[in-house]
Length: 243
Image 1 (cartoon, rainbow, N blue to C red):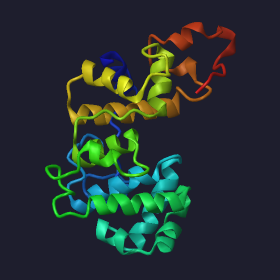
Image 2: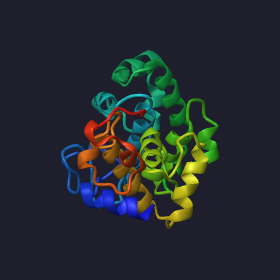
Image 3: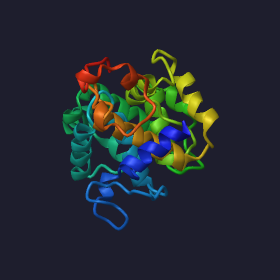
Image 4: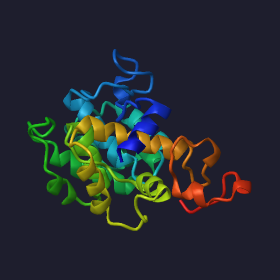
């Protein structure tokens, strides 16, 4: 696990996750709201709620679509849970249309806004528990853990489809394991440090997008050893494989 982290960190460098688009271009942020090497963001209630909204909006869609929805919410003056709760459902769903499943996601945003509407809920000390997040309709383990790690610095590793793909191809898992079992691999092998989990997950996503794609680019892949590459035909170059 440490070897994989070292290899992909060397290959891609710090990622600066989770982006806070509302702070894009400000001191410490790049033009897209990323903040490489600085794990103290977000620092404000509005920044934390932007991460929370992003975690919901990016479900089953590309980040670019979620980012477009966040931009429309910012333009409409949506910054805090009270702003979401004040919007009629039809208005909210229209603002987030680019994220897909917009009617369902509008309901989810209303639910998480209510959960975070209490005075201390948008602080690391007062954030809802994982169990409270999971009890909300439409909030699964990946979304809950993304909120806890990226908005509140809680030491929980986020497991997504990219994590399964990368780990199964290099032979660390078979790919059908439960979410909690894959998460436990990271929790058991690594120090429980939010910054480490933050960077590692972001690097896995970058690696899955750059090299370990559905049709992987094995020839230029920086990760070794890799079970998938070992069994691939040399003539095939980048053979087709299951995601």
